[in-house]
Image (cartoon, rainbow, N blue to C red; front, side):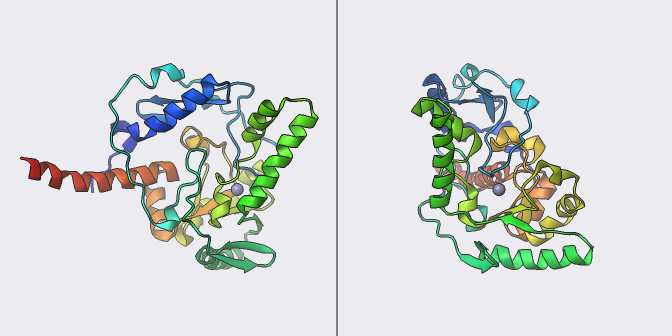
Length: 286
Ligand SMILES: [Zn+2]
């Protein structure tokens, strides 16, 4: 099978996001995104050298030196003519929820209970199997957080805005600053029930043997590290060793084999689908 890295080829599906975000930057909002060689790049931030967190109550964040070397946004929009928007995979286990992709209104979480935690039913089944294997290997794994409703996310966001206002920020600034620390309601993949935060949600988790175990074994059970250190520019979220995402074993193993984060993988699949549809059209035209 021919593997084509999507970012080297087109990537103008990101054009719309880039345009929207460049406008946002002009309005003194916090991010500017740019297309650089077709790649979505978090190019600049006012106020902070950190990327957005997906909303954990997690104190320490890593400065992302990668961001500082990014191109200015103005180089982004010169390039290509608009292309038809790619259709992302419709499989619910590949649903993409990030700062540019709100959780679809049609997505209804299929939740099951696990102690006081809720998460996707199939993901929970996979987690139970994974936990058993981890325990057999003497590895201590536990869930800090999984499903969070849009309402709870709204509360977390609102609380952050209020704290900023109490600290003296005007409302707009307070909201923008909150957006740096807490994912906006509807834009956290915890609302899908497919995300798990492990073992206390700390950056120290990367030194934990459980983290190493997960890197080696989670794919077998269908979980992937969702915000890897080397994908910050693509995910728009800082490295989060504790946050894993259920996609199912088949996709997880292919993502690991290709070395793709979810953003790369769903666009890779979308491009493949578009390409396999395209030859028929051009043949018909000739
Ligand atoms: Zn998380």
